Length: 129
Image (cartoon, rainbow, N blue to C red):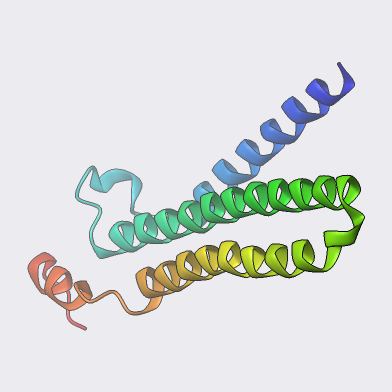
């Protein structure tokens, strides 16, 4: 029961901080611009997408690594003589799992800093870059 309460409290705090940061990051005139907020709102959505992408990737790889370590420890407990082979295989598997999160980080950084459609979108919206 205490775990559930702390989980609900933690998620509530996370949502509150997320919304507070979005409100504080809003531009002063962005509220009256409606759905066509301009280039600033487009890039703010790109930042939010990159943040969610890396968060989901880190969550998934964390679960995958935890399950891999759990299974390898169980295997070593059942057969201690094979601990060397199990450990090597586990480390290779952990490196492969971690590479998925690194790929997600690269994609998030591309979205944030090297978005190839930034200039055409800015030209379409009438901004000069």
